[in-house]
Image (cartoon, rainbow, N blue to C red; front, side):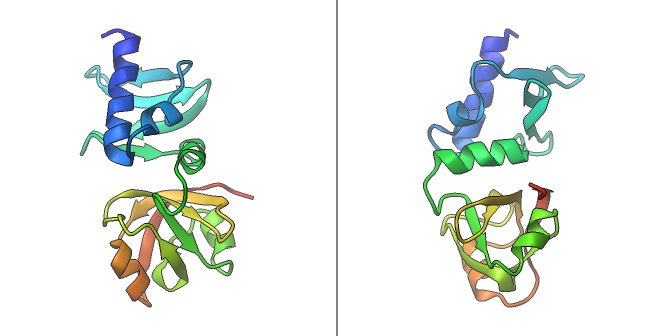
Length: 155
């Protein structure tokens, strides 16, 4: 399959997963696409930096910090965001789990299993990860994990 067709396919998947315009926001024309041994899209990189990985399990993307930052810039708050308290921010930035008791707000459209951006109160990206709870559950819960962080942005 031609690289232009692979890029189009990746953008369509991103638009489906994150919303209209996400594909172009995430993947510029200069990205490289790595394929699995079965010739399916596996990773999308800009130079040597990974933007996203396509999960074989469900065909959706997991985001690197670069991919998370691109989505954060493209979509206005609260889209795809979980806002955590300043007390939890340093730990989440290091890649630790974001717990429900520290969630201040979040996009009402978040469902358990969604790929989300964890941000602080100033909309600074702290991490990317997978929502463990729905938006309502994150706001109502006082115990337990809200987001399993994949990648913290570091200090």
